[in-house]
Length: 545
Image 1 (cartoon, helix red, strand yellow):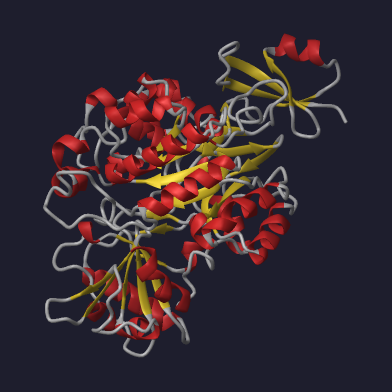
Image 2 (tube, one colour; image 1 turned 30 degrees about the vertical axis):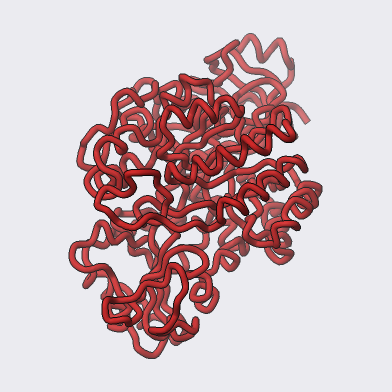
C-alpha cells in the first residue's frame, strides 16, 4: 500500500533537528516515513496519497497523559457533584454544585431514576461548599433505605449515609483510622483513605477494581482522550485482575480504538512479596495499545483532603497530619525489592513528608542496587522543596507534577491548606528543569479534567481560579510546557523512542489543533481548540465515536 502524506498549516514536531514542518508521510502500518516540506515527500516516495484535510490545522505529537485513571471513563455512570462545570465523554456539560442542598437534590433526582440499588456521586469537594462538612445525616435526606455514597474529587475521601456505613459494618464503636466520629461519638459519615473507604466502596459497586476497566469505561476514556488530543495515557492505579485484562485486550483491539493505554499495577492489590513477580509477568502480555509492567505505590493522601503527609509546620490551619497508605518501613522494603527486580515505580507523593520518605527509600534501594536508566517517577510531588529536588536529581529520577492544582485548588492551598509561602512554590516545574530532572505534568483525571493544553497553561501561568499568581519564579516557558505533555511525559513511561515527537520511525500519533499554540501565546494557551487526533496514521475526529 502506498503511504499517505498529511499536509498541515504547521507541524510542531518537538524534534530539535527539524522543529517545524508542513508535511508528514505515514506508512500503511502507522509509522512516520518523512517529515518536512513537499520536496521531502517526493524524495521519500514518488507514489503517495495526498490528504489535505488538515491543511488549515496545526499538528503536534499526540499528547501523552502521564498521570490519569481509567476512572475518567467509568465515573460518569455515577452522578457528578463537583464544584467546576465538567464535560462528560459524550459531550454533555454538567453544571457544578455550589451547596449541600443542591447536592442532595441532584442525588434525589438520580435516586428517582433508579429502581433500586446504591446511589453514588463523585467529584465533590467540601472546601468549595459553605457550611458544615457533608455528613451521613445530609445523605440520609437522599434515602434511608438504600446506600448513598459521595466520592470526593480527590478520590482519597468519601462520605456515606447510614445505610452504606451499616453495610460496611461501621458503627459508633468502630476504631479504624480514617473513620470519622462526631464529638458525641456517633459516625460522622466521612471516611479517609483506602483502609477506611474500601469496605464501603466495594459494597456499592464503586471500588477501584470495579472502575478499573469494563468495555464501556475503556471506550469512554478514549472519547475523553480524543477530545483533548491525547493518544497515549496511563491508567495509574489498577489491580489488573484477569477480568480487567480480558476487557482491556479485547476492547483496545477493536477496530477504531484510538488510544494507547499504560496501566500501572497497584502495589496495594497483592501481598508485597508478590508485586514484582506479577509486574514482570504482566510486562510479557503487552501489546501496542496496552503497555504493562510498571507499578504504582500510593504513600500518602490528598493535600486538600488533609490526608497528605506534611513536614513541619504541617497544615496551615493546624489540622492533624495525614494518613499513610503504606508505612515508611514497608515502603522501604517494597521500593528495594521492586528496584532490585528491575520494575519501574511510579510513587504517589503529595506532601513533602511523603516525598521525603520516597526519596530516602529510593536512595537506600539505588545505593544497594543501582539500575541505569531506571526512570522511577515521583508522581504529584507537589510540595518538594529545592533541597528535595536536588536529591531527586542525584537519584536520576523523574517527576510528574500536578500543575492543574495551581488553578483548580490554588486559592484553597493559599488560604486554607498550606498557606501562601508553600502554595507559591508548590508544583515547582522551573526548579525541576533547572536541576535537570525529567519533567512531566498531569491532570490526574478524573480528579481534574483531562486536557493537556490546560495543564500546560497552568504550568506556564500559575494562575488560580481567582486570578492570583502563585510564584512567578516557578513559571516555565510555553515550549517547555508543550515538551512536558509530549516527550517529557513519554520519557517517564519509557516510550520516548516511539512517541512524543514527530520524527521518522516513530508512531504516527498526532494531536490535531484548530489553533496554533504559539500564535495564541502563553496567556491564551488553554483556549487552543482540539479537532481530534491521528492515531497510528488514522484520523479520529473528537465526538465521532
